Image (tube, rainbow, N blue to C red; front, top):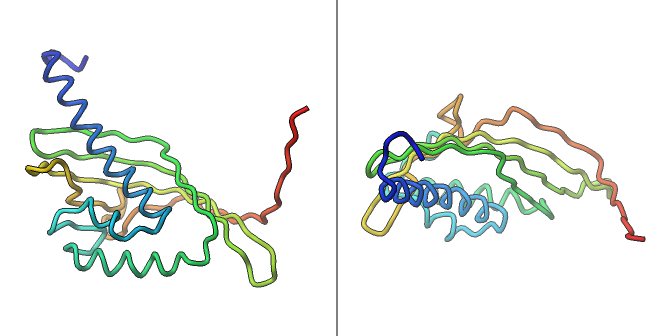
Amino acid sequence: MSGMMAPQQYHLNLLDELSCRRLHQIYQVAEITRDLDLFMSIWTEDARYGNLQGKAAIRNAAAGFFKDMESITDLRISPAACHIEVKGDTAEGKFFQVAQLKIPQRDGTTSIQHWDGSYHAEFVRNPDGWLLSRLCGIKNPDLFHDTDIQAQLKYEELHFTLD
């Protein structure tokens, strides 16, 4: 248990942290499935996403990058770590993830891109629950996220058999 927090308050705090973490998981699923409505369901009206302000600007940008992602035939995003601190009706967190993208190339081959992402997130509680009020890079808040590791590999399918 955290410090001298009463057990009931500790459990309520854990539920708040889980609610915030769930918003980031919805963000990841919305990116993987390119579901614009799901993506938009997690933001406050005045949210900031990188250097964008407000849901209309976020929707326009998301629609654009979902269109740009059409060449990706398979996308997987895996959480690496997160930390969330709840302070009443607000919370802040840091999220780290890795993504693998399968992309057909013009020469008929397929490449696998590996990316990492680091996020600073801010949340607010409203009458219906928690929403994201800000999501940006930890090092560069003008970006949607920081990316420190990027690699591209030639894709070669492996076939495993169980004997």
